[in-house]
Image (cartoon, rainbow, N blue to C red; front, side):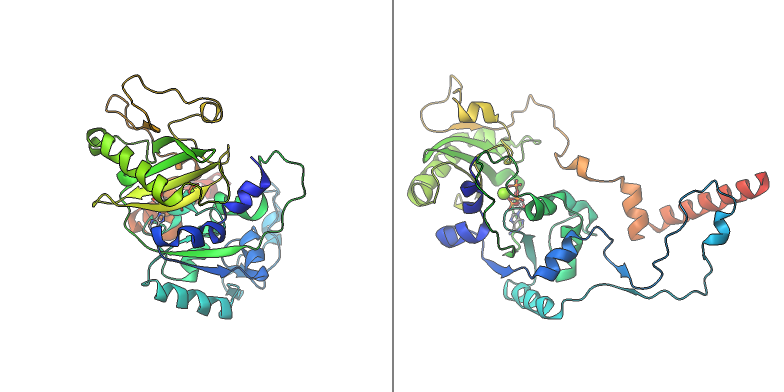
Length: 332
Ligand SMILES: Nc1ncnc2c1ncn2[C@@H]1O[C@H](COP(=O)(O)OP(=O)(O)OP(=O)(O)O)[C@@H](O)[C@H]1O
Ligand SMILES: [Mg+2]
């Protein structure tokens, strides 16, 4: 994969080419101070005073005296503010109907949806976007190492970071497919949500494959800047096909039900499949698998406690803390 292929797959590069066939979106340049805030490892809110670090050695009996835990100490907690950018973002969100799906140049914060109160990537304000972006490794990847796994030695191209806001659309996971395009030929199509079995996909596999192939031939083939790329599409309930995203043809992109080795060499056709792209989907024999993003989450209990969503869990937690404290007081 070449750096140029990655550059070409930026949202602002492919969107104007396929605008008629994709979800309405707006692109805003990301100001430098916002980029710095997103990359800052601190928490969402930054305390202005009380910069004193607590002592780290808990076994040190003197340490308690060093830390000021008393309630009467006033600490001001403020979040950084970006008034101009905030109002531009809010204007864009309103223009898109009030609910948006956020991305950077390449990635969405798919790995962070668990942190949002509604466990969704739907955003209504810039602070919703910030919460997701700051919790996402995929967003950090876009900002810090977009050319990871590229095999050319040229210097990294200059990137202008952008916030992409897409009109929120209720996409049914069973309608999403990933298309692998090599030398401007559609060589493979994979069900996107391969962890689930969808009966309609096995039943309508011929129609689905044909609809995607026709869409590719009529609206995508020879229209993109590269001849190798990965195209994500959505087939709606009326059978119409839409572009969802373009991704580089290489290891940074998930090959789903294919392997990169077969995609770069030769994709074997099932004996019962005729000409055209090879279409792979999850069959009923395969047991349902866990979500691929599970490893990015933290325990549900932790999330409930930190958001205060489950009051009973919080009470149990405080009771547990109290009894542990009483126990250690008795032992002392
Ligand atoms: N406008 C939208 N409204 C609601 N959901 C969306 C929207 N756009 C995308 N999605 C959902 O989010 C998923 C991820 O979107 P997208 O492909 O743009 O992200 P990505 O970070 O590029 O993913 P990948 O890493 O797999 O390439 C899609 O598969 C779709 O289910
Ligand atoms: Mg993508």
